[in-house]
Length: 204
Ligand code: HEC
Image 1: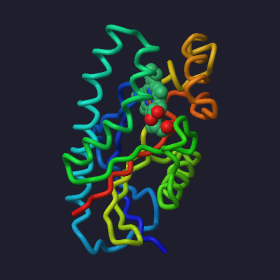
Image 2 (image 1 turned 60 degrees about the horizontal axis):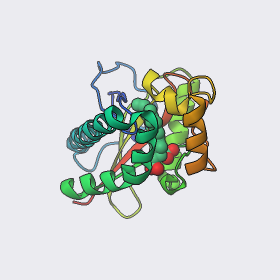
Image 3 (image 1 turned 90 degrees about the vertical axis):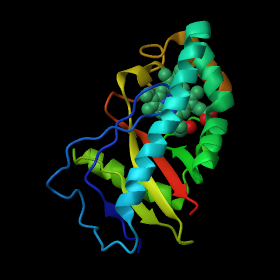
Image 4 (image 1 turned 120 degrees about the vertical axis):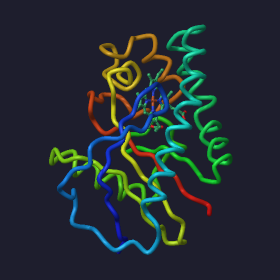
């Protein structure tokens, strides 16, 4: 059994195809019973994870804004397809971590969740169903690597590309997305819903 350590903090997401971390007041009630004594400094990893997620988001945001100003929303779709994975890769290398974003409803099949990520996603989906807060998680995988997981939530700005096609998603953008991602499942979201998770794996 994996020991999942729930920490009382919530991350919020902003921006186009990246997300930003945001602190919220700690909740007095634990969100799950699955607590265990940490065998490593999970608080330090949590803080590092949040900083890395934020830095990655900032790098992305400045690039996206430049693309959006020049080429509009369809330019951003194009940019995300070509650069989302490259950017998380290079940001990960700079911080000696592996950064991944994954989801229960994928757009890019290369972002498919592994078994641990699936467990975290399912836990968050359960909390969502119960209207409970979703806190970041720090845990070790079977190989002994420490992971930082955090929820990615849908904001209003995300609906332009992850809402309902023909309604929030303009027809032209819906077509472009369908063209680039024929098996896209990442539409039909509502604001506030769980879109996916961050998985930051520490290499040291
Ligand atoms: C301009 C359109 C656009 C907007 C706006 C947008 N996304 Fe995306 N999103 C994409 C595209 C395109 C991909 C696929 C990127 C790739 O190929 O790796 C994607 C992928 C993702 C992924 C990776 C998982 C997967 O399904 O492949 C997450 C998580 C995500 N988006 C969350 C968000 C959130 C949260 C917001 C709002 C803060 C948002 N997106 C806004 C276009 C958009």
